Length: 388
Image (tube, rainbow, N blue to C red; front, side, top):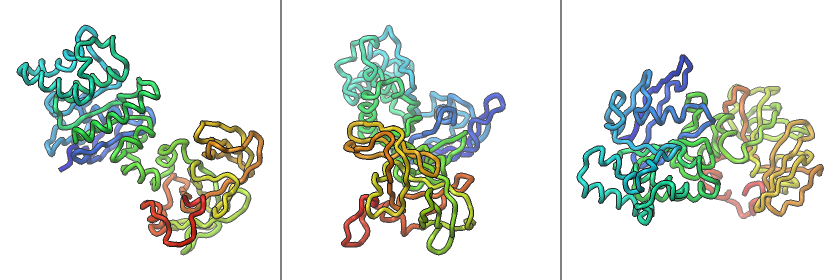
């Protein structure tokens, strides 16, 4: 049974459609992440599950029960907000226990739950402190503890780490992943940070303008985006897109002309594709190899505009000879300099093609399966840099 089912959820504010018929099934014990740009409807969707927003149409089911008209306090969910919203005059213990006291729970049960949550979150030594004596990460743990003691069916997180600094965000991400495994709970998490989504989620829901663009595991979305929006949103830096023209479409796939005139055949769906059509070629920065590495199927030439040395890696901003710009993620030892002419290469296995409407041309299973399984081709020949 699905822990949460959203069926044709629609919601409008002042005539503007914010959610446009959203259908999502969340499995029990799953860590599901809603991700998308600001204004895409992800927080509204989360508040709909919590009961803080009433839907215009559609149904919300939790544990198989229709809770569309049920009050938030009776849905069996607990929500952690972006703001910690702790009572400044109360101790950590009192903040965590407050909701249980409002339910008139016996003091012994309150104490058991609060101490259990504090032990899980490793904040037992902080129970007597006031919020002003806590760091940002400690305050967030208290807010999470307040949710844990309710022992809900579903945990809801609305961008809970956005107020933390970069280093603390990484630490808290790991804490939430461990917490999910420890509690074996169903968690639904909202973020605009796709890196956060990729590292935490069992599955990701990519939202755009109130509609679901794609649902899948982080690697499914990374390797097989269904459209240009998902391809550009998932991955950091985002995927490069290069305008290309179709030379031929046959049983071998789609043959395109790269900037500079070289031909490249991509094994993919050819339905509706004809010679002369305009497509977009997508290649991720980490799949481009400096100096046109040996064994690469495609090559692009250009001039380095900016070099960003990031320590363990180098990000090159390159202007292509035929127009357009790309980013290349290289090693930290890259010797590239501003103004240098370079050639970069890539494997056809890492190439994506997109129609003018943004939909991806489906890649053939035989071309994708080795990549999806992370196994090398059945050959004694060593992998080239482009195929790694």
